[in-house]
Length: 222
Image (cartoon, rainbow, N blue to C red; front, side, top):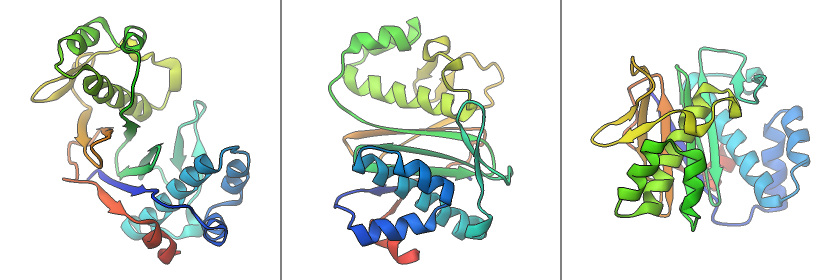
């Protein structure tokens, strides 16, 4: 089953807490995080990786020292144990992780002011027309954007799949029109009225709602 977890960063992380979180991730991840210029971006990246490790330990029974994460040629992270898949996404205050025994992709975005003409570049013609017909165009834009990003992240081939090269139809069901066999499944989740979240997965079994975790719960675990 696809399980989704999220933590909301609602307070500053103290220096001793930051050090505690850093000690829980690999040396390679610490090096990567040290290169992130903005503190808030580093905190989100760190929380995402610690939360992922906790999930892998609690849900799948892995040992922290055995969790080895690689990246494919396009940058998609994957586990040495390829029977477990995960996807990470963060936007502003929210950090999220999705896990399953089958491949998946996750995206979360804060709803904000956006030039809707951007959709002409990234949406297919059908999608752009659907957006123009929507009562709330901005809401539709971010709904569709997260669905498309979740699909691309699931494929794990980066920008080699242009967002405009496939069409997603939003109705009673969410369908990817370019996939004749409909082997991929979509689900939207709500963690915050100001955000959109979507998952694309090979599995059609999804959790009913996001598992909300607090920063304190993460720190207490480690």
